[in-house]
Image 1 (tube, rainbow, N blue to C red):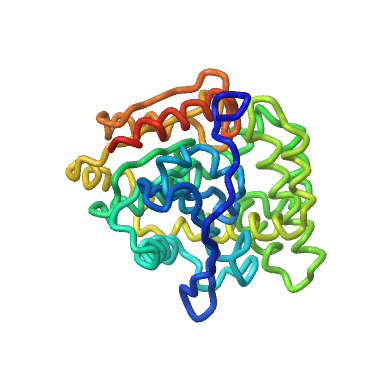
Image 2 (cartoon, helix red, strand yellow):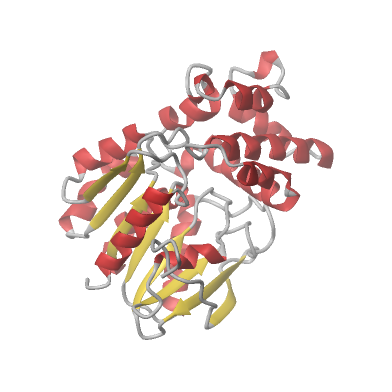
Length: 322
C-alpha cells in the first residue's frame, strides 16, 4: 500500500499490446499484477478519457490480474479522436475481444462515470462473463442526466456559474436551445482552430466541476490539445447519439438481467457529484438492492477523492475472494 494507505503502490505492466478490433481501430491494452490472479478489467470514463497508470493502484497486485485498455479513439488507441465505428456496442464487443484474446473466462468489471455505463451494459449483454461489478459515479446516459450538466441553465450552472460562463460563451444565443448539438457542429468543423477551441471549452467545463474542491491541475488538462479533442469529440458524439441505446432508460430497464444472474455489485457515489448527480445512483440502488450501496459524504465526481478512492479499494479487496 502507499503511504496514504488507500491505494496500492504503482506497478508496471507485465504485458502490453494493441488489438485490432475493426478495419479502422486498434485498441491499446495492458496487464499488470499477478498473471495467475483473479482477472479484473478497469473501464475508464469519458467516453474518450483514456486510462492512466494510477488506475492500476486500486487493485492488490499480488491477488489480481489487472487489465486496462484505452477505448476507441483515445489514449494510446488509434486513430485519435475518431468517431467512425465508435459506439457503445462497439466498445462492449471490444471488451469481449480483449477478454477472449487474453484467454480470460470471467472477470470483475470496474468502471466509473461513463465506465459505469459501459460496465453495466457489458454485464447485461455478457452476464456469464461478469464475475462482479464495482461501479462509481453512476451514469446511465439518459437525457435528463445530460441536460442537467450540459444543457440546463438551471442545473449544474447554478453551482458553477463562473465555469459555465466560459463553457457557454462560444455558443451564440440562437444556438443555446441545444448546446450539445452546437458543440457537435464545432467539434466536427473543418476548421482546426474551431475544433480545438470547442474541445478546450468542453473539457474545461467538466474538469472545473468534477471534484468537491476544484483542482487547478485537473482544469489544466483542458489545455492538452490531444486529450481535449479526444475527450470532447468522443463524449459529444456519444451524447448527441443518446449512447446508441434504443431507449433512454435501457440500462435501468435491464438491471434484472444482472439480478437474475446473481452478479455481486458495489456502488460508490459522491454525495456532491454534479457531473453524474446522485439521483441516478439512487435509482439504480432501488432497482438493484442486493448491490452494496455507498454514499461518500465529502466527495464530488472523481475516483481520486480520498473517501471514494478508499471505498473503491475496499471493494476491490473484498472481491479478491469471489
